[in-house]
Image (cartoon, rainbow over all chains, first blue to last red):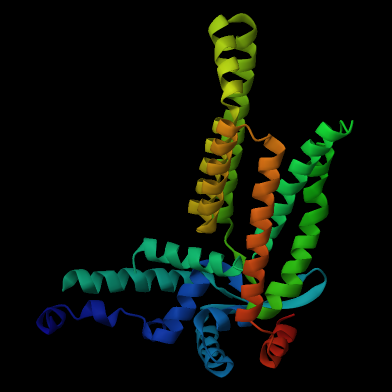
Length: 105
Length: 213
């Protein structure tokens, strides 16, 4: 297995390390399957503490993968989180790269 | 990491947002009202009974949204689903409706001129309970499969069993509707109680919900 990876290490190099971190992968996956979700929903769905979720979301936001959307629901301001176009592409690419790594093994 | 696993996550998310039982309560009330309307028609001379289930969605949808905001959102937060799934469901539903209407109209037209169609109509009337039961179970299963809400399979099965029983021991249609509606409402309330117990409103949730809203 290691030999195979050594033979073609480029596929592993293509893996986005920002997404590859398990907690961030969970956040990205959850946001990928919906249009948007708020902080509380993500926290419950992923069983995470507010501090942990917040720090990972900040990293994803810095990378331009997640955007904070301020919207109005029945005239009340609401903060939603959603994947950007860049984030969706990055997740799709990560998925393909990971598939490639495993198919090479 | 295959596409089906993402679909599973999407379904799981959908299920978790509808585990509060509110949708069951409202669907149950709708069926109950429909049954009550027919019952009212058979007991009194209330001929415009169909108005009740017709205007119900207009009244109840805002109440359902408000209940979702008051009960569900402060506990598990808010999620907006991608329109893909809903669109697929709408297309299936409208397709079935149009196909059903087309078959019905063609059949009605044929039954006035063709003897076989007239005989088939009489046969369908005689077995209407079985046909309705199978139809309701099919639609319910279709929604269960598309939405990932497994309890809809149980509702479909209940409808099928009740309508089959109704056919063989001659139970009036409206009583069957009242029973199904009541069963769905009771299950909805059980789910709601479980949901409230599972997600009690903590001070943290209130703070986060306030920040989000």
